[in-house]
Image (cartoon, rainbow, N blue to C red; front, side, top):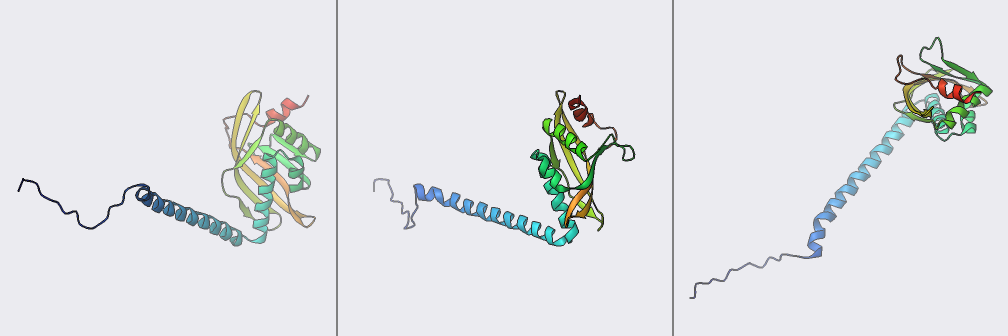
Length: 197
């Protein structure tokens, strides 16, 4: 004996190389895809539940408000007009009894043209709440962003919307953009005033 021993490693095979390295990431990838699929199914189920939970007028009102908001963001005057009932009004108010701005008819076009020129973006920040059957009333927390006189403005407020059926379709009869008292920024009236000679 020379002081050395043979060590028996047994017959189990240990695999080295690319296939061994891919074993763990492949299992992890499978878990990630499974989790993503579960998330997508949950989101779709939630949307389906929301749509079926709402009554016809609630669902119709929410769809009109979503289309109206999208038209504001696309700076699409025709799209906004398509969501409005004949004789519709738009107002901006810090006090609901004394609006800072009220527009109807062609005046709405003037307000929207000024807002679109100011790069307005309208973001829904909360749930659309709908009540009533005729007229239907809705509230939706929203955020307005625009630029006026070199100032980037962000207004957090609530859109108060009245909807009626006109021509067989639900339309917006009144939209009041209501800001809380003591806002941090000036009123959108600055945009309209700065664009009017």
